[in-house]
Image 1 (cartoon, one colour):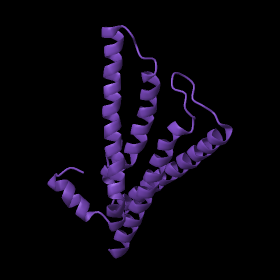
Image 2 (image 1 turned 120 degrees about the vertical axis):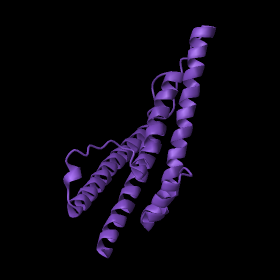
Image 3 (image 1 turned 45 degrees about the horizontal axis):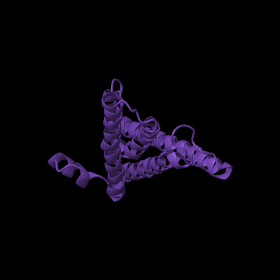
Length: 176
């Protein structure tokens, strides 16, 4: 969270359920930021080793791929919290207040449904890979369930924040 005055006003206006989860979701975004820097560092190192030293490391592409999945999944809930996701407001600008509320509730329900499907399918994939004892292929050979864990964490964070946002929206409307 930045120190911007608008961010502070928005945070204080957010429902309690969202404020409760915001630090955890923010931490996921911070981890995502660190992973972006790590991927940048690894890519820079790889380019240097390949074109200056002439000895390209074979493991960096695999690790960077795993980092990209992790950085997206750790950052998805923070992007949702901030409203930095893709949206098209061509039709929604004409909605009444009630229509707008229903749109936001529908949107949050869709995010929740997506996170549940993603979480359950990732859990099944992790469980299968763990029980089967499979390993990743390529230069980095680790148990294949390990790189899948960030997907599960991201799905859980996204789902929890969708629930918090839904509760906040419904409670806000009930108080009107």
